[in-house]
Length: 162
Image (cartoon, rainbow, N blue to C red):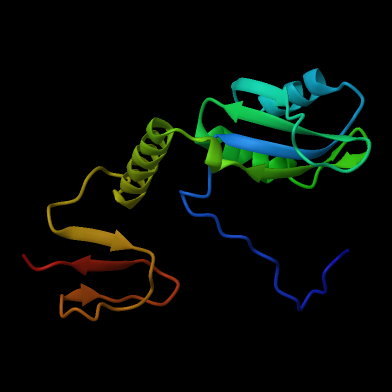
């Protein structure tokens, strides 16, 4: 159903702990199309596994598949693009499945995320001098550190005292 222009878009926020390289795909037609589903998902990155989950409850004439990507970023991209997309006449329901992660998987995921965040806060010209951070907050610091405040839609640079 189309939303009204004045109505805000529905947004679902995922934390790094919610995201996973493991996905569960529901509402797949029971037509023996696992290879085609694997091919579709592999366009978003290398798959390590694409298997039916026979023990899962599902609607009549549909199957549930377990998909494992080699990287969380590929699973994130696939979920964003394929959740609610139509596959052989059925609307796919794609969800993260972090419950299948090992402790090693979780540690790896958190380390990759830490590196992504660190790379985003560094300036394009390289790293900043020690004690200088940059945030897209648009508000001042309440901790007494000196700062330069531009407008609310511009970046704010905080100079942290040492």
